[in-house]
Length: 370
Length: 254
Picture 1 (cartoon, chains in turn blue, brown):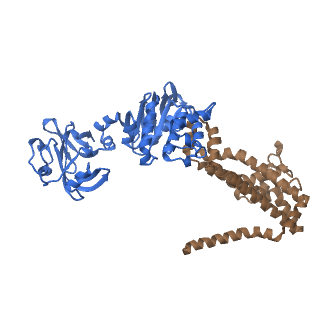
Picture 2 (tube, helix red, strand yellow; picture 1 turned 60 degrees about the vertical axis):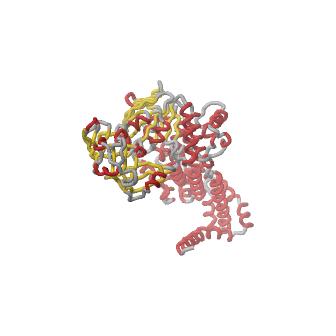
Picture 3 (cartoon, chains in turn green, cyan; picture 1 turned 120 degrees about the vertical axis):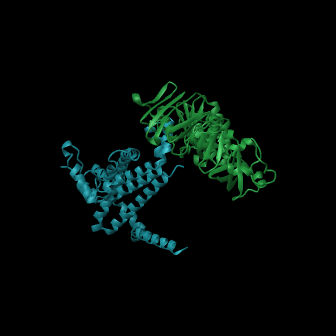
């Protein structure tokens, strides 16, 4: 098990973390959040003012008792962001660099074979493709026989085509290893993919740590919600009827949520939970049921009867197609993003300037205090 | 080609002509026969041999002591580092006569260190001291810059792979900085081969003991201009060959 406790002025870092054997914890956060500093402190490349780092029974850092083991005597497999392969050494010599004792060449080749790189053993890093470089870096880190695996943005240097196969490769490695792995990334989706648990790092502090699904479903703050890809609307909450909470949005309009809250809140929802409708379009102009009385009055005429209780009149400001999906940028007092199919965009005749009604369920609206 | 590019080419042509013309003139003035004949002179052979030995010794001393020192200056930040860097570069701007006087005052027969038994003068060792003094900054400057330019993450990677700092220096930093180091070595060697003023003042000009090629050229210049030309031509060839050899032997390995 890897135990980390750090407090340092660098990036205002202050965190405590435990990573179990065979577990991968992914720290995600924007740049400048102190992600790389955490890895450097574990590897011994940076000494924090206060801290404790232990891999199993080996204490690597304990500022309280003046212990600070130099990096070469901590068994860390560190995959650097740009891989940091030695340019003057061939692939197999890079892998063999961390192997000591006899039969270095044979042992290095065994690791290269595991990553399907035997044919590239004699190539210099400059002659390798991005994906090959990433695999050499992984092989080199594992060949060291590490007690802890550290991965700094392992996919960020790859082009989108290589990324899929590299992801599969890395998942397999993380599955196989019995050691604790700590991965840092600026991309929540990447963190969710690799991490058994994901910690969201903001200004040096882990604001929420848990299984990725839990973070998406129950973000602890507007920052986490925003970071997990949700849209955050701000407003002031007050109790409504039926145990629901009314939120008067800052830009005008009122929405409801199933979460209990009062005072200033962030209301977060995912773009794919939003349904778009065009007022006045055939079949969509029915009167609405009583339950919708909580909804925004300015959208009253546009919504068909449904279980969705939130309706906001909005103006389309942008449409970006990604594959078969389209991200529709909306302005409803506050900016809002909906994700719908490209077919729907054509059916509804959506274009910038069009007036629409954004509809979503009260149950899909998470409230976090502000 | 626009007028500005044309202007750039014109300036390059002027610079090149000015720098190369005197060197070419040496070879135009002496025929090949005279060049060979000037080498028959035992004093010429002595001077050439002495220059090679002393400059090689100086360069070896500079590399052995200068490389770790440059590594320290490039990788550590400490109070007064800028001052130290400037002090190291000081001999670059010293007039050779001042360097000679300084060496006499420090390690001459009645210099500061003479009571401790450390003094060199009028000996081959004194030549090596003078060459080392004037040539070292050329290597140190280049080496420091070359080490500072090595990708920090390579050094970090080496450490996490179990190599201590000494091993990291030997196996990663020096190979990575090799083009810069060899450029510094070539400059230092060239400076040592051409050293004149400090050597003359500190070590004197005795054939076979302290008379290096530049000193031999100066001695002939008064009496035997053709001989001086011949020896100059030889020095140009040797220096040029060394510069090229060093540059090509240590080109980037990647």
